[in-house]
Amino acid sequence: MSQAPAPTSIAPAVQVSGVTKRFGSFTAIDDVSVTIKPGRIHGLLGRNGAGKTTLMQLITGQDFVTAGDIRVFGEKPTENAHVLKSICFIKESQRYPEDFQPRHVFRSAPWFFENWDADFADRLIEEFRLPLNRRIKKLSRGQLSAVGVIVGLASRAPLTFFDEPYLGLDAVARQLFYDRLLEDFAEHPRTVVLSTHLIDEVANLLEHVIVIDQGRILMDDDAETLRTSATTVVGPRGAVDAFVARREVLHRDGIGGLASVTVSGLGSAERAEAAAAGLELAPVSLQQLIVRKTNVRETEFEQSA
Image 1 (cartoon, rainbow, N blue to C red):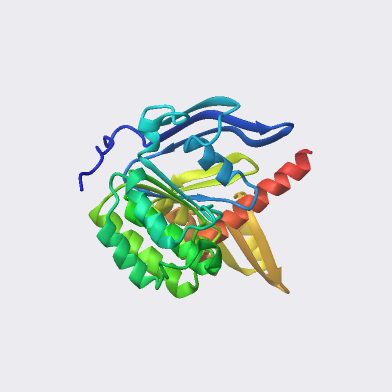
Image 2 (cartoon, rainbow, N blue to C red; image 1 turned 135 degrees about the vertical axis):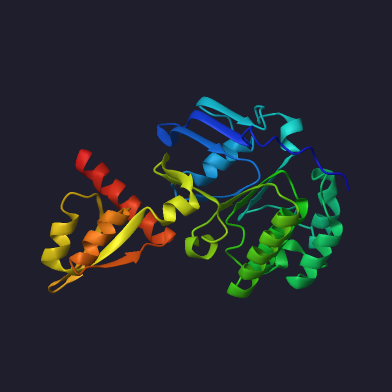
């Protein structure tokens, strides 16, 4: 099957510029600017109600911005069939006609996705053990999630969003999804955005991370850069407090005379200083970093209110 023209390596897949989205008096997205680069797996992360789904709905042309501009492959996505045929958006709450069965979903998929790979879909159907002739409303949550995952992978759309559609899958099935995503991405590169709460599970898949919190972008950087951007310092309370006194503290914990403090990234000289002071340094996982950064912002917000 013919492939859709790939976006150039220079032009962004998505450019969001100063976008605000209000629902009445509530601001769901607040002056957001972000770039989604082509040919990479991105993580769009954040707490419930942070604005992730709203942002994806705006990018995929399902709603209009209140202010600002969005370009997908250089064009506005709203009411733009040329752009929309290059997008696949898989949601956790995907709706289907009441009498639909999975076989109907996969049979109609080529009408919407010009890169649809039926053979790949058949392989995934077998691996996820999905019943094809059962009515959609009779499927378990995991089976319904498998329908979305299979569509998202086999569509091979140039821009594919997964908005937590795999939460109904058990651990084995989720790992199968991650493995097949990486395998197929290597053979058929495209732009993928994963929105999930399961940060530790997907951390090794992500090349770029965007964290949204209270409708604003909190973090936007390469995953490898973020993985080395914070360190936990552990040791006697007095020595730890002296070491972190002039540094940005993201989290503080401790018991008795021991302290554990997470600070923004340390250089080689600072690491040597910590070692000379008898302190232990531990890496911070992507999930821990996001939790720490989100909590810091909440504290700052409360103090300024």
